[in-house]
Image 1 (cartoon, rainbow, N blue to C red):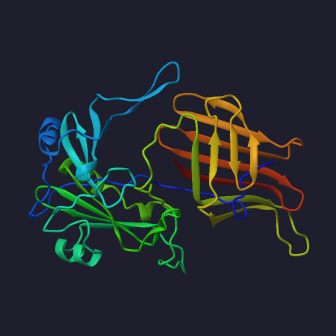
Image 2: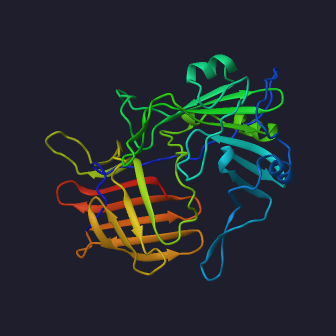
Image 3: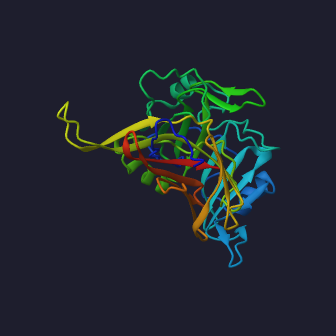
Length: 353
């Protein structure tokens, strides 16, 4: 079977989604952005011009055709020349995101002041010094002994939150170096600023009140901000994994007097071992991975998910992928009966683009 070969078979329990931020605190800060929270889309366009991209929630028609709605309560507008991403709810600007890098042709990072004279080019120490003590800090966990200077494709991040009187602010930094493009030899160092988000008070209070992700889960892997927005997944996708969980049944051992039992183990995955899905709009899509290429059978396919399965001829092993189209994530599982170690399984979850 052309199975994806995770290291010794493992799992990725992932959290995802980068937060946006808001306002509020006992202290006001000098606000430097050219647009203000609460503005209408017309107000924003009068200042920034016509948006480069505008989209709402993905919509899939009865014929399977996917479109991004241009109307609706929640709309996102990208202004490439200004380096600003604007989020609207019922035509009211509720959040502003400023990326230091986006990878899109024509996108220019915002060059002006954000808050208290800070710019996207400032260092982490400068930002922390000018903004003062954060209201909350979240850090993705790094394995013991990790060299933060070694670049990885999808690095761990740290998110810092400040609640000011009139808005909330989130700054996301790299907790380890990032390999952005091998072709362009582009690498970002640890502690580099990834993005700022300014968010309206009601949303910020929600984000601030939820438990810290680091305390809730075994592992959290935030969705990288550099991933292209090509959702929902329709015909093809390339996915990566970061961690996996392996389970196995251990037979009784009379010599060591060990009873039978089930073992659990978590492992790191190699992010460069991608899995590519081709012809997802057919009944016989192809899956390419570090284990080779194989045709998979479609168990189920609808507007939200597509489930694929492959079984060896002797029936000793089964591999399955479930792709969640609109979220851009995939769950991969492998179950087999090994003559050496007995029943064994692996599950992992990854991001797709």
